[in-house]
Amino acid sequence: MEIISLEGTEDTPKILLDKGNSIFEISGRSLPEDAAEFYQPIIDWIRKYGEDPLDETIFVFKLEYFNTASSKLILDTLSALEDIPGVKIHWYFYEDDEDMEEAGEEFSELIDLEFEFKPY
Image (cartoon, rainbow, N blue to C red; front, side, top):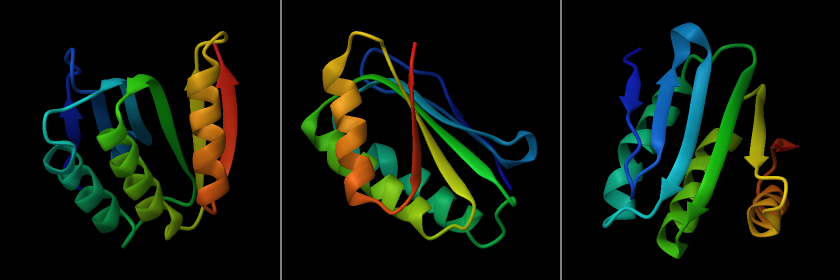
């Protein structure tokens, strides 16, 4: 499977989706001009990955900030992961960032996946 590797910018998160090395991560800031256009290849990749997933998939979200448009697409990304057996979400947040912790908790209530919350 092809690897998606995008360097983060001021407005877009770093994305690394690498089945061969078991690395699945979205990190940084997410406020792309067109969130739907930015996230669609990621959601497509996850759906394709779901056809032949690893036994266990740890998907890491390490976001510092995301806007409302990104929130919807992050939910869509999590929804795509929901259909894959063996997926766990590791939701990282700065120790003093209650907003990001709460955002993860809200996603965990909407999505039927195991979440682990990891302050750093």
